[in-house]
Length: 223
Ligand code: 5RP
Image 1 (cartoon, rainbow, N blue to C red):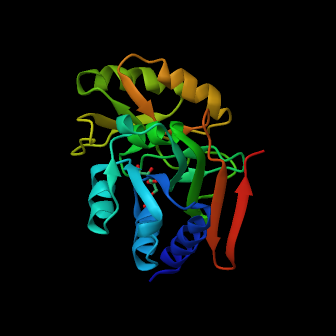
Image 2 (image 1 turned 30 degrees about the horizontal axis):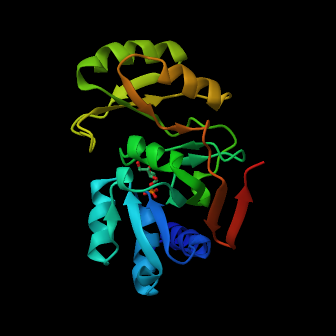
């Protein structure tokens, strides 16, 4: 396992402590969350959770493969915990997500959850968000028009060609941003007609950020 994978696994292992018996848990998407799912299976914790709401078809498949019942969000009242990774995180626990194209369902499941525990390796921690291209899910017919509007924010939107989201939409990645006011940018992008979701998680940041690194894990909580 690479040092980065070891760090991801450490963060994922630390997130197990937030699971309560009989919990309904939201589960995100990506390689860090895959470690979390593997650990759930390995440690026979599957029997301790009632089930999960998943943020992607890929995660649903993995959860079912280890015997976790996967519920539709419409079938449940709400979730006590959401565990997910991120592409970038700042010390306010604002995040960029969507590198795996699952941002819309991830944001919905995060919104439905009482506590959002984000698990990352050290390389994801930044002072200013934006080095990682900001993903925006768009309705396909609006892609070019939305790209022109996004360009007015100073970055360069690029169509992630060949990718269709689980919702049947396209992704634009905005390169070259320096996001000094994440809440304002999230609101502004949400206001563009044709945008389904932006991968900035600032209005609803993580509540807990677990960072895996060469010297173990550190835990940041929302201020
Ligand atoms: C998927 C995401 C992931 O959480 C993000 O891309 C991090 O992935 P990884 O854990 O593989 O580094 O937002 O849409």
